[in-house]
Amino acid sequence: MLSTPPTLALDAHRYSAASVAHAQVPESVFYPILETIEALRRLAFQSTVCTASREFSVRQTLIFMAGRTKSLGTELHALFMTRDRTAPGWLSVRPSNFLLAGRGKSLGTEIFTLFMTMVRAAPGWLSARPSTLSDSFRADFSTPVAAGDYHLPVFPAEVGEWMAAKPESFIIDGTLGGGGHSEIFLKAGARVLGVDRDPEALAHARARLAEYGHRFTTWEGNFSRIVEVPEIKQGMRADGLLLDLGVSSRQLDSAVRGFSFMREGPLDMRMGPSCVTTAADIVNRWPEAEIVRILFEFGEESRARRIAGAILNQRATKPFETTLDLANCIERAIGRHGRTHPATKTFQAIRMAVNEELESLATALAAAPSVLKPGGLLLIITFHSLEDRMVKRFLKHRSTAFLDEPGWPEPRPNPEYQFKLLARKSIAPTAAEITRNPRARSAKLRVAQLLAPTL
Image (cartoon, rainbow, N blue to C red; front, side, top):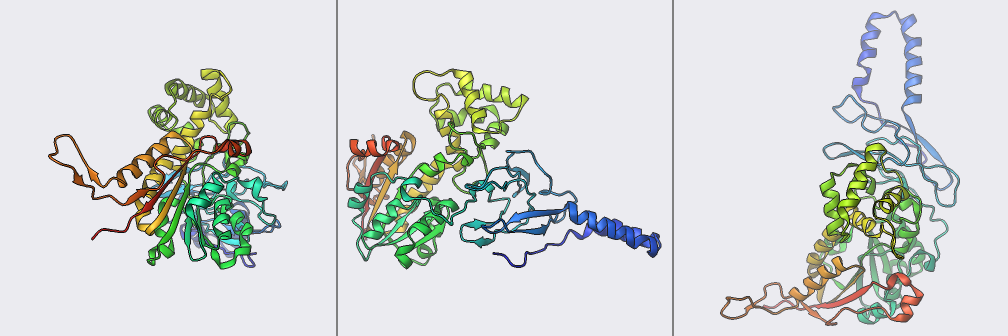
């Protein structure tokens, strides 16, 4: 808990008018007026920041962006409004009024400043940095969510068998989530580094796997930035790397995260606070052509133009605020046929655009050889055709020793030949697993091994 909240001074330019007034008004009149103005100023420009798990709050003075006369983060904004880009590289925050899980106190009506730093005030609590963190990533982790209630890992038996973790192994779980796969490796005696960009997932996994002590560590960040992990930068290489792509059950089931069209929540869809774009930004601000593009490319939605047109028509009257606003708009535009909700592909496409999922995957795949030691194992779990196609093509190319093209006199050595496919085809979930975990039905597991470099 913070004992002494930091206080940041207002821009010195704000006192210029008072300085002129002081030169023209007698002291007997000036000072009472100045004191009144100062009191009103403090009242108007202070904000409440939640700093600990027992509703302890501090008052912190707002400041202005250096070199500007207009505040870029002090205005009150409407409910559910998302962040606006206000200057190159700067974001002001429009906090949303969501309830903290298990509490009845609003945590989204406070004014946040542009320069407020991120401070860990208590286990599982972060104060807000407007450019990177929103209230939807706050949670009370004093009572960890039960393992089965957070996220059921897919392919638990297959992942454990293929990874073959041993006491001397060092394994990176690049998409930690609820920590289910990491627990499998830890039980086998391995040392595990869990990577995730969701602070809620990291806090849950740390609490759940605390019994393994120093053998389990975490790093907050996107798996695409795995080369920035301190151990990797220092030259350490892993015996195994697991990438379990997609959204965790916890994220899907949490209404305030905004992933589901079945629950009322904000149009957020960010997997972590490092994402600078929200779903609301896309549907309320992106041009029609860009919305059509992501629906075609990421959602493989054949009715992308009709959906994009409906979105533009509705936002011209009233901006989209919640997940059900968008889901209902799509259903009105294209109708509902069969068991699949008509908004399914659109929500997938917007989520992938918000989190830059394919871009992150491409970067992570290219970095995998520099993360693994020779003989290290790469396990990748995909959930839809776009990411599986990317993984399949990457592994096929990197596991082909010689390349041949029409017009070449003979095959040529592949300079990017680095992997050996241990499973020639993707591994599908068993019927028993699909019964236990229906969300595993579209999952595919691919396994490869890094070869020793040739001299």
